[in-house]
Length: 279
Ligand code: GLN
Image (cartoon, rainbow, N blue to C red; front, side, top):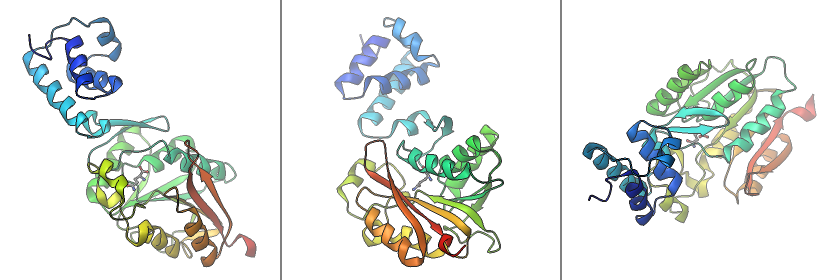
């Protein structure tokens, strides 16, 4: 009998090669076109040889560290099911800290204009639009492939966003002014040991020069002149970057600078308000 001949044997094989049980079930369910619940009750169901081959290949890729989201093509973020390809970073629960902070700020505004810089899959922009339909949301990304993924997600979820192709603020009409700007930019330093576990994701979305701060500094430097008076800039960052970023925000003239922690209790998002002291 082949190692993958039945559901039960395929799951045992997955365990032997180090694939998490839930991941193995989701890969199997996708390949067989069944629900995960069906698998639980059909340990002895026999797999066709083409399914055995395909499941074997998927489990090997998962054991090699490819994110589950790339293998099944979807990922849940802030209650939305997003389509994900290797052209975009897999959305992380950490980023929900940024979304929730932006939503708190949006609650006080009538028809807010929002920009998500470096939108990737569109995760942040779409989560904000879903939770706050009255907000006018723009999103930019320098990668045409990423923007295509984001656009596709927007169409599928019927959430209208204005998409812009280009680096950070650059593609935006200089006359546009925003009440809230958010970004989850690349912030890992080149050569950081964490990158070993992230090799399947687009490096341009992860790595930034100057100890991981280069893109964050460009975003901060571009913010004056793009934000309305009292507008906010919120930036996701590495666990050890809050001080450097807060300093940079204060230097350029932001006030009310603060940092929030992610679900693991790590400082993860810093932000400030533009020109509030002058109003
Ligand atoms: N904004 C996207 C996200 O949070 C992409 C981030 C990135 O590519 N650095 O998932």
